Length: 431
Image (cartoon, rainbow, N blue to C red; front, top):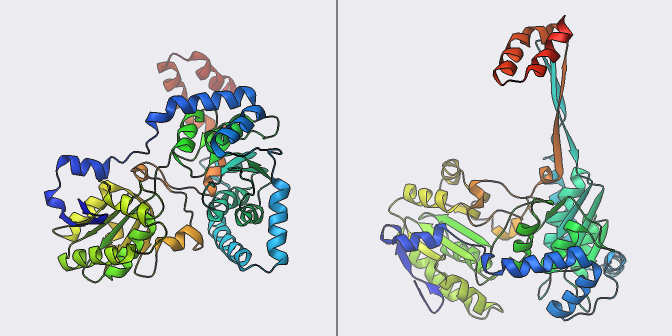
């Protein structure tokens, strides 16, 4: 419940089944548009560049001449560099931090010998990856960094970026795409961009994996092409859950809630505390912090949603149980013993510990990836990483003695399954 976009404090114990469902069964909202998206994907798949240009006119109000914007990205980067633009410095520092973090995720190949069996695993990058970078009314250079850098770290041969067309694509976004190391940039957005990356067109090179955040049209298109290509996951609107005890600074908690609420009117922003005074202070700080913001209407709408609120727990144990079921994209723990609380929570996309770890740090420059599971997806998978762009394969070498040691086990199981030739392939070697 809210008053004019400002949440009121609600005890968790008083939440009805419908209230709890709103928090725990968040939806990306793609069901209502699946048929329309399916039509868009099919047209791009069959008509290629012609469909891309028609959809650019219809959805973006832009006449696209050259779909390939790779040279434009290089020029944008050079122009910022020539102008000593501080935005390029920020892009470069953020990209360096993200690169360093993701380099630590590269797994090592290994071989080990056990009883004459040489066994191992090796990792190789996919050849072609596609990254969607949102655009439209806003610029998202950070999404370019978060999508492209892990792919280049993994060693992908060809990294293609799709970003919505415009009379002039934001130069900071283009510069970030170039700095991150993309090999190709295409000005195509929405569902049609995902289709173009998945299936290729006369201009767009098809890829094996498509990743990156976007609106529900992008998400629905990823659902549509999944199976023909790999995707990262189906992401919905942004989310934050803040766990706070009586030691938390209410201003900091409110600042994090407001920051996520300005993303999207459908964002889910929640604070849970066991301290009533803290809860009331957070509500007051939210009210004070909304006025004068450019996106105040968006913030108020997000805060008014059924999946947003300031909740009062009877204990931090109840707060932890709520967090575990919620499975937040972003989990901020602002409490005296944040490590102990985190140890009790498994389901989380990315955790931010302590008062000086705002989600914005992870959104832009700390190093971890900001492309994270939403809608409870953290119960099943993690965020975008270097491993997203790697394939693993196993290696086996047995000597004669090792095969002889396993022969009875292999042949017994093979014959139990009715696969006589499998058993014979072992016996023949040991005759």
